[in-house]
Structures are given as structure tokens and as C-alpha cells.
Length: 233
Image (cartoon, rainbow, N blue to C red; front, side):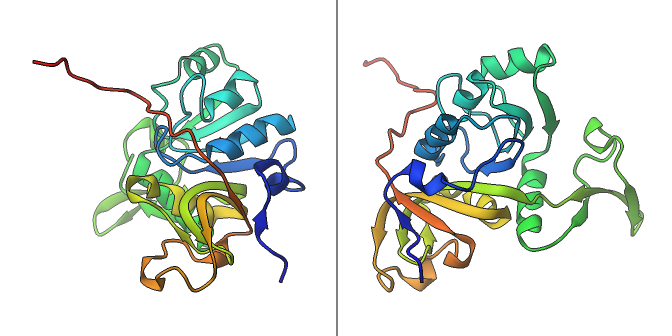
């Protein structure tokens, strides 16, 4: 089998990116984002991207870097309140936005990865989230149809991987990453450590290697989105 381990983020993305593609990106805020892969994606120069991500990073990090260079045309997101450039582009009509409740967004990606074209949920019924979507009653309750998401590429950040692509996420960095790995037609994982096959406890694997096509080991900056401190007494 061809090795899944690549020397650097740029090499890991080679041949996988193109203009107009849909890319799903793991993370919550700046926690668990594939930051070095995002930088490499920016440096490819691809444009007109649809980005599927819980949020849009901040102005100078994460997906905020791709907004700054105008490489993202459309966002499918849940929370975008930490990015002033995102707000500016959206309010001026430069950026398309599809809002999703967080649970719905996670399930849309999971469903897409599981081959489920759509599902009905009560979340969003009677709100702008449901506008233009099919609704159906079950047991006297109204549900709205949400489509599964299938991305061209999924970018995730994991703590450890073995050489066959099995992934372990660390604590809250797990967030949206497993669903992103599932929904991508191709998945690239940025990891802190790569170990040999058999060194990971099978019961601790969060994402099976069947979902992961390429792995790259990086050293991340792990920036803090909002640093909260208290004065000494």
C-alpha cells in the first residue's frame, strides 16, 4: 500500500484542491483546527471555495486567513461572531452564508459521510433556518428536512495517528473533526504524532483509518482565541 504519511502540508494537499471546491474543516473556535493545512490551502491560491465549518476562525488565524485573501465564496457555518472581516464581507454582500444550528451542522456532515442523503429534525422549525425547506409531520410534530453534506475535501486536526490513518483526538479538540473526516471524499489529517500500526489502543481510536487518505505531522501554534486572566489579589 502507498504510504499515507506526507512530508509537509503542501505535499499532503497536492492534487486534491481545485477552484470552486467544497472543503470541510474541523475545529471549534481555534481549538482543534488544522492550522498548518489551512495555511497550505491558502498558499495554493485556490478560489471560490465553499467552506463548511462550525465557525470562521478569527481575523488573522484559521479560516480567517482564507477570508482575508478572498478565497472563500460561501460559508456553511454555525457561529461566526469572532471574525470582523467575515462580518464585513457578509454585510457588504461579498460572502454567501448558510447558517446551521450546531447540532444540525454536525449531523449533516455525519449523515453525508454515512451515505444518508437527508434527515428530518425539529431544530429550526418555524424559524429562518427552515425557510424554503421541506417539512413533514411525524406523530403530530413538524420536522424540517436537512441535506447531508458531502465535501470534496475534509481537513482535520488530530493528536495522534498511526501509519494507516487511525486517529485519536485529544479532549475538546475532538469537536467537529470526526464528522469532517467522514464527510470528505478525501480527508487529510494534520497530527502531532505518528506512531506505527498497532501502537494505538483500538478502543481509543475516534476515527478509523478508512476515512483518512493522507497524514502530515506538524507542530502547531495552538493560539488562544480569547485569553481570560484575572488580576492578582
